[in-house]
Amino acid sequence: MSRLTRIVLAAAASLAMAGALVGCSQPARNSDQPEITAPENPGASALVLPKGSIDQAVKALPDLAKRVMQESKIPGMAVAVVHDGKMVFARGFGVKKQGEPGAIDPYTVFQLASLSKSVGATVVATQVSQSVLSWDTPVVQELPELTLADPWVTAHATVGDFYAHRTGLPRAAGDLLEDIGYDRDYVLSHLKYEPLSPFRTSYA
Image (tube, rainbow, N blue to C red):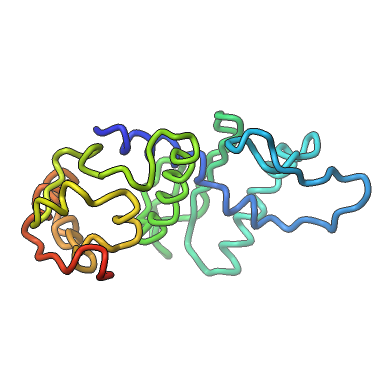
């Protein structure tokens, strides 16, 4: 497993519930509430939270999850919250398929589809901010097994190129191999058979 893969996997859990916490309705700020200030450390939280607010938010999550399920008509969901590097909430709600048994728990695997793009980009951005790597880091430096149809593109395609979809790979390259059961290593080793459009001047 490459360093880049470990970074994404380790940090993804810390983002799993960010949307739900941001989505919680907040009352209008009054004079007793703290100002939102930018931290000196760019990796730190940008919001100073009132004492006890995390506990209150976590306590409200079960009712919020049930309301979201009712309003959106989804059969189930899993919710996790990581705060200060610790799991403070992990619970499943509902079922995997409407009308069938099979309860969702914190270990249920979901298909994220293209949501993984924004989650992955956010995680990588935190590592760019901490100078672990940069958007200009060649991906082959972290994934030496990656081979594209053009050796020059293989050597020069960067993290930023892949996130901007400008490597020349066609749309959804490798998806069909994954759909029929091949693993990540197999998919990466077979991207070399995908014809490339012009590097950095095409988008897919």
